[in-house]
Image (cartoon, rainbow, N blue to C red; front, top):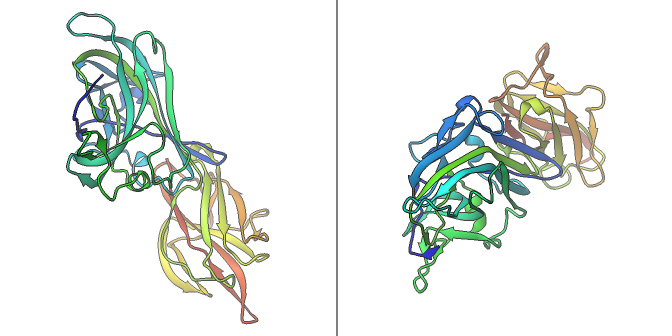
Length: 364
């Protein structure tokens, strides 16, 4: 590879995924030849994947490019947004190299492939800002069969670039190496991911053309820590702070693996979780009910909680039987559900109640 002043363009591409004790996962397998809301210089085949469909590049070009979220292009929302709300993130994909040759000599050659995360709001002199990690060097000998490539971000709150990551959007005035623009940090990029790329365009390097016959499958997003995102408002309880509702597990509805959590409650107080499809904003007791429409109460045996000495509690729920009105309904892919913890409280010697800050989860 020959160093060269080079800015990644928004026509390049990336992917993502995550890990931990409590984990959610999204996987794009291009089944049936679906594009999974990705685009680039790949085409999408219904067969020869790992298994089923795959994204296939069969082209003489400078580098492979598979993207979601670029302006005017398909956007898979599960791969975009704020990753700092997760404790950790793992980005991964499967790759197979059927052939990778020089267009001039037909000899086998090597080319890089990596993942880039782009925040268009942090653009610098060289274009949109982002971070890049080289997953592997591709070759016919290194990946002759399906091979899993992955990188894990253990600390999404890290300001400095972790080892192996490159920032881009600006360049060092002395060395001309790519750097993040002023004000942008590793965590600020992760907090506002507008595009994800799987790409052979390495910031700061120039490559000649190559003949690619390469397949990609199972572009995955796995996240460790809480699911969903907070919304609405919450009033402080008798502990002096507002409680906060959360969720851990998997955002894939079919996995039926979600545990609702709450923290910062008065120790020892009892409560339940409530759930709705619609949002609301209504004063109730000492708090704010942020659910609307039909509201279900998760108060079956084993679901009424008591906050522990730290003010926390957790309740596993069944996604196939969410209480709504006179019966239960299953959570379906694509639906957004709102969850909020209600709890008893004592203020000034008098009994009252309060509600923790809610969370909303969009399921896959």
